[in-house]
Image 1 (cartoon, one colour):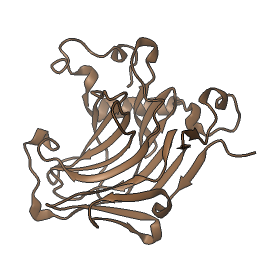
Image 2: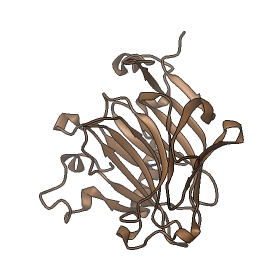
Image 3: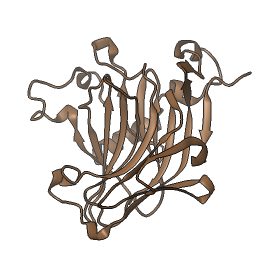
Length: 278
């Protein structure tokens, strides 16, 4: 039986194109790794060769060590054009000894403003850790080392747009945003530490590749009726996953748009009242 989905892993030569940085992005280790660098003149970035409509996307990262203030390392999905969709992991650097901020956001039809931020329970600069996005028609799950940190559910039934019709590519970059990235822009980049370098490896995609408007998967409705589908198609958190999500959100969340009354004095978005965990 032909596969309903496209699965690919590990080799950056096969999966990705370095798209900017004038040599600051480098595929290394026979395609098993990729490094991105940032100096005072430019950052760098790459994107997946294919675009996808739903899937599981895994990347191992080792972030910029030491004084990384002002730097932003990213791993995200995005469509193009007006009214784009986007699912974001952004890692905001800090001064030495202070934790990275993991910034997450979801855009649908060009509208975001759904940020949650976390501090990690480990040092993300000393070893590789796995960051994952599960995206299907029902929900988006953000995971760190396979622990869920955020779930964003489809609430189209109450008028909240959800990204489910625009294919997206995977994008990764390292760039300077010291006007806002570290402590609200109060701490600027110290260029005496440049070049800053982040490392990527074990890029894995198990998803529905889209080419010329045709998906490698059947429709989600028919696909979910078939046995043997990849877990991301109908992934639900088990009791252990729900407990882990509660632990992360209670211990390590530092910002939640659903609790920011100063930013949203007119009231929170409707989905904030319909999901305990977003």
